[in-house]
Length: 323
View (cartoon, rainbow, N blue to C red):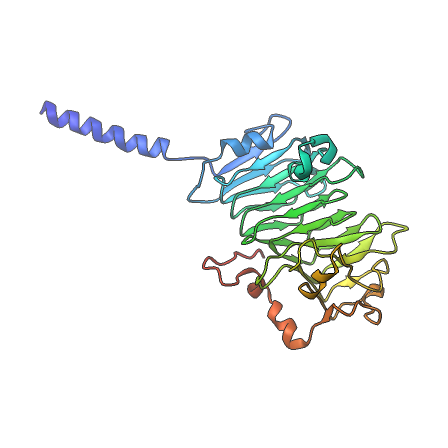
């Protein structure tokens, strides 16, 4: 009888231990006034379970969060949901000379860096507040299957860095602003119904798409705008020799240069780049003076740029689209 009682107690202990210690919060609130679980976004990330088997949602109340945030690779299936896009503000002011870590200092200047797969952000401003002082990244993405909806990405040079040869990212209804090469990197990225705002005469994109990759940067139904006085902006220039960037059904403002596209330092790269347009509108969409190494897509070619084709090529795990 005593042995049976001991066994029963052990069984109950194991059962309750698994249920208590196996559980983890999936709804976390960040609020600067102390009304949430944490007052810091990074503290909330650090408290999240590594490699969870269900989504973890971090709700961020309105406020200005002056911090540098890293979402490490172990924090998969994590969401940042802001209370409102223009009042939930994550901001930091690092830039190349301030970081001072040698020739690669740019890549340490981020305000938010996402290394994890399956990250989702919505209704939040991500800002590099350094100003026009050189390279300063607001958002650095390394993970795959990441989604940003109704977010504001604000900076100057190098605002948005999309790293990762196999990474796929979807920006939907976002506002992205900068000066030089303010959207750059090797990832496959779909921009849907976004506003792309240029703060100076320079270049919007600097793709570094890798060889044999089907898609680089794809802009669909986006609006390209500019600050007052800006009148000569190029759609892109190749950071690497196989750069791919395509604008489809976008509204191009008068600030877009008639040539459309520009070379980098090596003219031979123009033989391997892929820069294309399809049925764009607006004063900047006039193709009569476009560079002869850019492409105007046919209807058949444009059909290859459906959302599912762009974001689910070859790879076994499908991209989860937002509605």
